[in-house]
Amino acid sequence: MLAERAGMRIHEVPVDWVDDPDSSVDVLRTAVEDLRGIARLGRAFATGALPLADVRAQFGRGPLAAPDPAGVPRGMTGQAVRFAAVGVASTLAYLLLYSLLRGALGPFGANLVALVLTAVANTAANRRLTFGIRGTAGAATHQVQGLIVFALGLALTTGALAVLPAGAGHLVELAVLVAANALATVLRFIAFRSWIFRSRRSPQEAS
Image 1 (cartoon, rainbow, N blue to C red):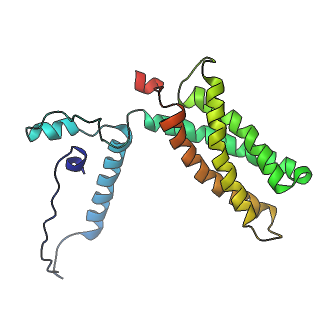
Image 2 (image 1 turned 180 degrees about the vertical axis):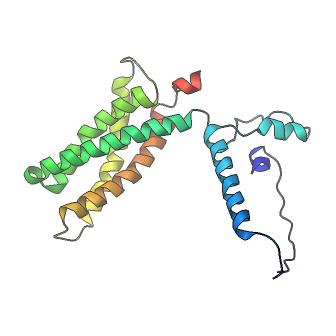
Image 3 (image 1 turned 120 degrees about the vertical axis):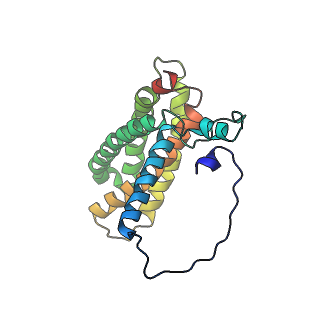
């Protein structure tokens, strides 16, 4: 994985496997060590701490001309944690609004109103807390872009409600909406980071 991320050429070499029933390998200990190694590698990906420059230097290679391909840029882990916290609060607010409005507006109307209100609040909260953007400059544009992304969440949740069988209970509706919102949340984070707030760096990335 380090070699691949450092831009090295990878070759596969076939081998013949002969099973040895008398092997002294401790399968459980080996599996645990492998899982620990995967966890260490995952943390390195998440924090951008892979020693790619050192790997290339050991092979006499210069710095990579392209941007660091470590996978997850520095600061992204913190952004993801803050985004998740905002997402949990938004989902709870959405479920509360949906439950309160469903009797008067029906499932589709309640879904629309609850999503619009929470989408505006979600974009504002992520703008300030997740991506560290202060002031009013560009706030209106960010809200418009956020509403465009919100349309995706509306399509997912409306589709989820549409496929529910008639007579499905309220708890089933809420469970389906939570699942649809979870998918929409992942797509929203990608859109926020790569499009809406792309030109801004988080406080962690700026420091």
